[in-house]
Length: 118
Image (cartoon, rainbow, N blue to C red):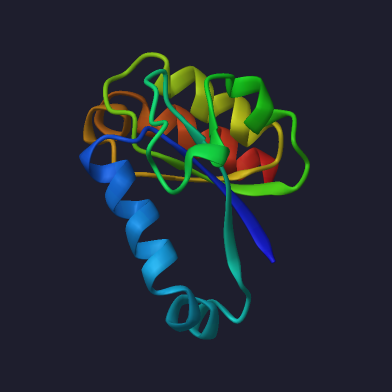
């Protein structure tokens, strides 16, 4: 099983979590491996969420967990998204982002580090 973390639980992040949890079998078949959400990073509280046990406010939980292989960055904005993305890549994790500002502003730097870490 591939363990992932989702950083951000706004419109995009909650949509990613919904898709991953409602289409589990289809995604596993296409990916040839099950995808499990281990963490959802957000500063807000979601006590009524069916995923309440997955929430963390600590980025360190994600970056320091060797089981997390893929990080989905959907926080938006440049900071701390850039720093978190770079630290995840440094830690050997794959990062997927929907953050246009991050890619437009820091994309070349992110790609350079990712290529060095391959």
